[in-house]
Length: 457
Image 1 (cartoon, rainbow, N blue to C red):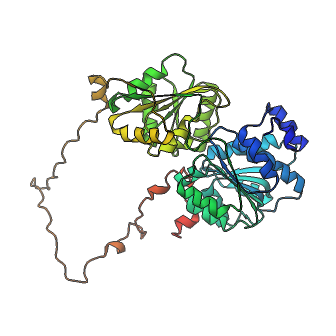
Image 2: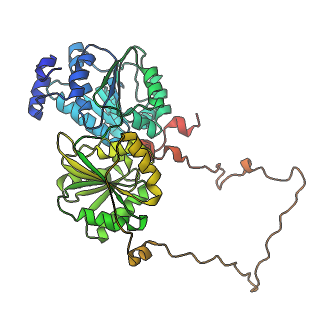
Image 3: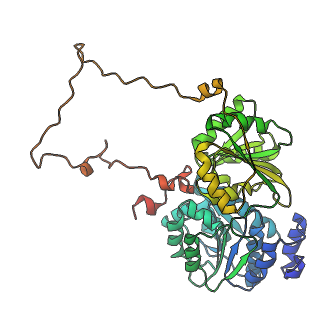
């Protein structure tokens, strides 16, 4: 395995950009993947987050684009990179621009939660490299302002998170618009059965590269579990964040509303924090990340949209206020610390209700996490966190002061009833039920669902 980027025979202009970025030695995933991609082979890459996957596919893609020459088609792209989140898509695009700064290639990023105008303009001109989230890209295809018939290389990054966010139907639909004769690069941190099936559909005679066992945690992350009643989690979290050695800290919440509640509670405890989740507008997300990076708000409370794709240096602690429903998510969360050879600490707050989740995590990572016991909340804290009971609803008296008698069910002859499905909301529209299964997808983060979902196809 090579120890230098020069030995990988990359274009000298790419090597110049790498030197300017301070990169000297390829990571294991880069050293193994780059030669394969340069040969034009399909690749199945299995690696933890933070191992350098973007450069592993980005550097050889840039090299091949320069060698091939040519121009991107109007409305289309030559390389398509699919990403599960806005943040990861933006970071991939930024990295591609940095690595290819001396090559004269064009890169665009497309995701939901923002207006269509700039994205339509970028696609009209055509780009060499397009980084996109599946929902917004499908929107542009449905609007006939984008085309994928000239894609020569397709990259699917963080495939298992794509599955978790419900993107599998959108990906399969996008594949119908992409030429079958292409190079496909498939990256995932874990390989559940569904991801194995998707890889089998997309890849042709792939080279498999695995740089770490599936679902293993980073070696330099010191893990511990604090067993505490749910009512005491707030106090323990504040104690940890006020302790010695705490730098940038990611706190994970299971829900969006929970993340906002934690931020409010930390503010009451004198700790500056911001929240980032799917209900936040893009500019609010960017402000939160900027404050996290510059240290003005060194605590970021996030749902799992931030579990992968937020590459911030010197995150010293990851605290899991809520343990995840999916054990693999635990690995992705703690991968936000101990990056680039640094060390870090991961703390999980585990209530009695979380015990089954903890056992599933320890079974997955094949180790027992060191634990300690903490008492619950004080009586005052517990009382403050409990909601006041709602008074029973009183029957409304009639105008005459007497209670209205309950209406008896009417027995109507057949043919006079109104079928449930025929009842319409005011304005003549059918009442709609919310589709909760797509709530974490990029088009639920403030933008409309893709047309193929809106039309019921």
